[in-house]
Length: 560
Image (cartoon, rainbow, N blue to C red):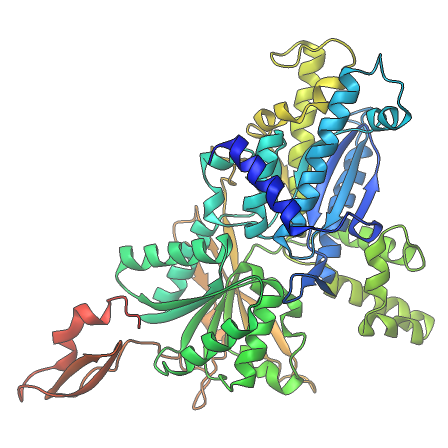
C-alpha cells in the first residue's frame, strides 16, 4: 500500500475508534539527550478490547529496557557524554492502542521538528516547551506480531525505526517493513523447528489453532509449506481465533478438535490471554487427551496455567513447546531485585503497584523478615523474568551502537550527518538511524547480534520445552523443563533428551502418542474417504494391503 495512503487510512481509523488519550497509567517517561520509545504489553485485553488483567512479564520487559539504558548511560565508552531517555507505553495487548501510542510518538516528533526549525521565532510558551523535548529516535517493541505490523507501517511514514524483542511473524521479513528490526528469530525458523519436532516423533496428521492475525496465520502458513515440502506429515485443518469477541470461536475450535479423535497432536500458535482461555475451554469441554505443541509466545509464559484449577493443569502434561534460547543474566536479576524493593511504596513506575497487589505478592509482607526477603526475591524472579528479557536488552543495545557510530560520524563529517550546529543534532533525526542499525555487529546477551537485509537476526536458536506434572514433590503443580534445542546453523539442528519426556498417554507415559490420518487397514480392506474422514470399512481383494493403496490420501490436506 502507498505509504501516504496508509498514513491517512491509519489516522482515520484511529479517529473512528475513538481511542482514549494517553494517561499516567499508560506511560513511564524519563528525559534524556536522546529518547527511545517503548511499546510493551502490561495488561491482557478483555473480549471487548479493554485493558484487563495485569501481565507481570511485561513489567520484566519494561525493566529490561530501563536496565539496558541505565548500563549504557554509565558506560564511558558507549555514547560518552550522551544520556539516553525513554518514553515507555502499555498497549494492553490491543493493536488499536499500540497504534494510538505510535501516532502520539509521530505527532510529537513533528511538533518538535517544527519547533526546532522555527526556534528563533518562537514566542508561544507551549511551543517552546515542546522544542525542549527530544523526538523519539527509535522504538523498542511491540510485543506481538499483529501490533508490530501496524506499528511498523505507521512508523515507516514517520521515518522512525522499530526493533522488537518478540514479534516473530514472517510477514515482517519484507522490504515493505525495512524500518523494522528484531532480535528474536522469525517464525520461518520456528516453523522449521516445529516441523523437525513433528517429523521426529512420526506424527503424520496434526491440526492447529492459531491467532487470526499476522502471528498466527503466517506461522501456520509456514508450517503448511514445511509439510508440503517434506511430505512426511500434513495439517488437517487450522482454526483461527480473532482478537476480539473470540469466546464463541474458541468453543467451536475445541468442539471441532473433539470430532477428530485420531488427531492427538495439536499446534497452538496463540499468545497471552488467548492461549490461556483456549486451554480453559478445552478443560471445560473435557478435551484432556491431546498433546499440544506450543509456539514461542505461549511456551514462554510461565503463567500459562493461571486461571486453571490445580486438577485441570493436567491438560498440559506431556505437551511440548518452542521458545527462544533461555539465557540468564545475573546483573539484570540483581537490578530487578533492587528495583522491586525500591519501588514497593513508590508510584514512580505505575505498574509496580499492580504487581505488589497480586495475591501471591501480598504474601511477602506477612512473613518474617528473613523469610520475606527470600520469598519476595523468588516471587519477583519467577513471575517477571522470562525468555525475552535478553532480547529486549539487545534491542536497546543495537540502537545504542547505531547511535554511537552515528555520533562519531557527526564528529568526523560522515556523509548524511554533515549538519551545522551541535554534534547531537544529527542523532535527533530518526530517519538516519535505520542505516546505522543495519550494520551493527556486537556481542550481546543473546550472542552475536547482526541483522540481514530484512532486519532479521542472522543467528536463530530455540529451546525445546516439555510440560509435565511434578510427581516428585508433595504438590502436583506442572513444571516446564528444557529437554532439547534447535539451532539454525548447526549440522544436526534438532537435539532432544527423549528420556525426560512423560507423555499424556493412559497406558504408559513412555509411549509416544500417535497422531495419524487413519490406522493401517487390516488385510482384506481398504481406506474409504467419506466427508473429510477416512474409515476402513470397504472390502478389498483377499490379498490386498489397504494402506498401500491409499498413500496419496494419507498425506493429503483434508478439511471439511
